[in-house]
Structures are given as C-alpha cells and as structure tokens.
Image (cartoon, rainbow over all chains, first blue to last red; front, side, top):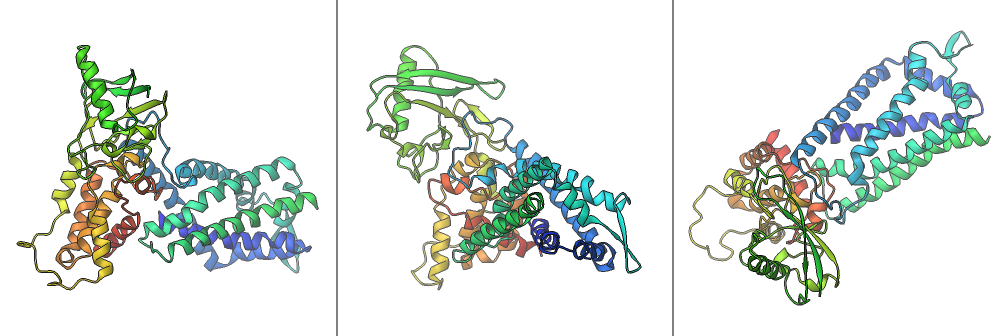
Length: 207
Length: 245
C-alpha cells in the first residue's frame, strides 16, 4: 500500500513536468514530441505496465483494508471523530473515491482517445504525432472542465498531504528528527503538485 | 451542578441496546466522573431500577480497568488521564454528556458500558513476555543498557492496556497497544532474543482477533491516558519487516 503510494507520488511529478510543457512552450510540438516519446519508448511502455500495476495494487489494498476496518467496528459511535488528529487522515477513503472518479473521466478524456486512435494526428518530418497539445488547449477553453480538473487536484492534495507522510510511517520510518522534515516535504510536495497541475487549465483558459 | 446524561444501556449481547436519558442534580464539580456515576446508580437502585454497569478498579489512574467513551473521547475530554481521574469541573452546569462503551468487534459487549477486553490478554499471552526466567530484581547496571533504549522501553511499558487506543481509532486498530508491547520488550537485551518470533505472532494474533488496520491517523496517541507515542507503531512495522525478510 505504502510502496505503491510512494511510487504513484513519484509518477505525479513526472506527469506534471511533461504537462507543464504545454504552457511553457508556445510550439505545441514540444509537448506532442514528449508525449510521443512517452508512448513509443520501450522502457516507458514497460514502466506503464508497472504504473498500472502500482495503481491497481494501491486501489485493491485500500479496498481490502477499508472493508476490514469497517468490520472491525460493526457498531458506530453516536459521537465520533472528536479526537485531535490530522483532519485529512480521517477522509482518505473519501478523497480516494473522488480521485478514482476523476481518473476514470481523465482516462476517457485523454488516455483512451490516444490508445484507441480517436485523437487528431499530425504529420511532421515524416513522423505521425497525436496532436494532444491542441486537444488539451481545446478542452481547457471550456470552464466546466477547468473547474472539474482543479477541484479534483485539490482533493488529490488532501489525499497526498496525509498519504505522503503516512507511507513513511507504514514503512517503519518515524524519527524524532526526520519525521518533521518528511511532514514539511509532504506539505511542499502537495502545494507544488496541486499548484503545478492547476496552473495548466488556468493559463490555457485565460490565455 | 445539574447534568443531563445520555447513557448507552444494553442488557446483554443478544439485546440491541439504546441510549437512555437521565438527569442529575447538585453534583459537586469536585467529584470524579465515576463518583458521579455512583451517585446516579444509588438513585437508580433507590428507584428500583437496574444500575448502569461499568468497569473500574483502582480509581487512581494506574490500573486501566475503567474506560468509557465520553462526548466523543475515550476517557473523556481531558488529556493524559483515565476516566477515574476525570473530574466534573471539566464540564459545565447544564451540559449533556453522551456516554458510550468502547466499540470494537474485538471488544464484545458485556453489559451497558462494560465490554470484554480479554483480546488484549490474548495478545499478551501470544507475545507480551520473555521466555527466560529473569529471577528476582537484578542489581542495577548488571546488564548495561543504553540510556536511550532504557527510556524508550520504559515509556512504552507505561501502557496500562485500557483499550482507549482501539476505542479512539476510526479503524478499531490495536497497533498502538501491540507497538508498545513490541517496543517495551524488543529494545531490551532480555527481549531481543525472541524479538522476531514475538512480532510475527503478535501481528498474526492481532489480525485474527478482528482489530482493524492502522492508517496513521493518530487518534490513539491523542487519546492515550499514558501518552504512548505513535513512534511505537513505526517501530512495530520496522520490527515486523525485519522479522519477515
């Protein structure tokens, strides 16, 4: 669970780095070439399978653990959740559900379109590219998409702020001196990821 | 002070149970929470009604026998105390106090506010001991132990096994209790010998008894009357990985 989580945390940074190319460069081919590399390189293709495996494991373990946790307290308290704990840790399964719904919609929007050949193709220097950059720009010109994506990123942030540091503790890494550092890193990482992903639809919409 | 009490009443495991409202008048703010319940029970007996059943023993905050879920907190709203050390001055005149039993599958209901916490005894039988005969108390410093480890071990040994960690945890997990036992024993040379076997047995038994899983929420640490730290949970995880691989 924690290892798969840390793996997904790393992937989020890579994905964000590539996505930012859309707004950093005016030439859409910069992003298209990066996306082309990501979908054609053999190493990345293997990594893609590992990534889906990691995501699947994370979801399956979460479901098993959650069902066990519900069974561990068959009768609920009348007054519960008043303990002084981190707010977001109480709602991990709920934020996870929202992220999963977002992921399905996100896959239908982009990933499946590319995989099943529904995206627009362009021909540059004898190579066929998916014109994903234009598709992203078209999509984020619509306000409901912008709002939906940013809302999903905020919920992802709620999930990450606890998940990041909890993963370390589950791996047995808790230390008087280093845990505050991990917690600070979790906060910085979450802010960077939420801001980094959110800025893409915002810049495209207001451009 | 005058109080309204909303107390969980349940005849036995077969019965569904329900909240019953009581009103108490002229309770001294200096009385303890259990004394307040004693006063209620005296009144109930006088009225020929069944008194409220709850666990208690030493009433000095050290045995871990008492325990109930008061206004959303195990052992009530105060910190680092058991319910017998909770005083009515922590409440206001006219307050409504909701009192529930510990709720966990591993702690089956006995009656009213009393649950069966023998799952903790089962865990102790499974690994909360060292197999060697340690004899009588040895001379001080006979076995050299680093001060840091001695202190960590003693901090973990402060656990009184009241079950507040399980009651507080949204997943009814016993990781803090088991973590405290593992830390207490595995940090000392006497307990190191069977550290690997102990942690494997304890974790297997914890799962078998129906406790939930830890999500590092930290309610256990926030509500523990003895201030057992969550670093013991990470140590339990560490010890488990060491034993498993």
